[in-house]
Length: 154
Image 1 (spheres, rainbow, N blue to C red):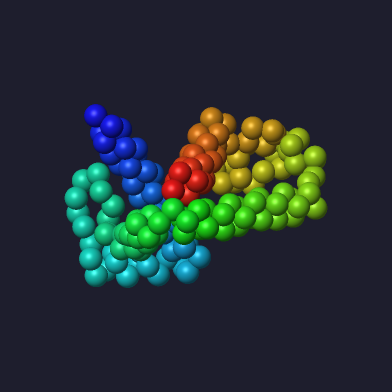
Image 2: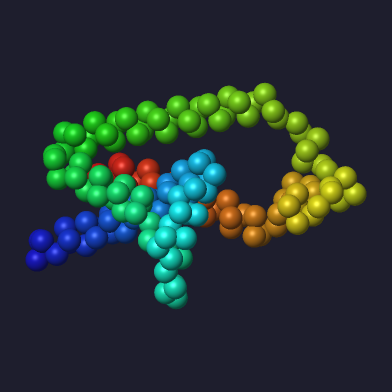
């Protein structure tokens, strides 16, 4: 059935959108000093295994907003996609250019003796956080990719 394939694609887009919306909520919450999570932990706590400790209304709002934009039409979706693509390119360019001024090759050769706290600062050398650091970085990149993919697919 032709409609079934479209339903599967739409459901996968919503799953991607919700996970990215949750990540955006965490980023925004950290920017405002964790006031959102503190408020909801006090006023609407949840004690359900495998779920968050509070309902994430901000992520729900983001998901509903993107759904509304999809319902409005393809032209508006495309315009939003273009805006987000330009913002993503500007952020990547900004980080890259700022990073060029901070490059210090000596940091790749730091010995264990020069590190104060190996728990927060790694173990020195080129691979300071080992495989768990790689997985942490990969998870961050995955959410960035899924976020871009949701916008591009929309």
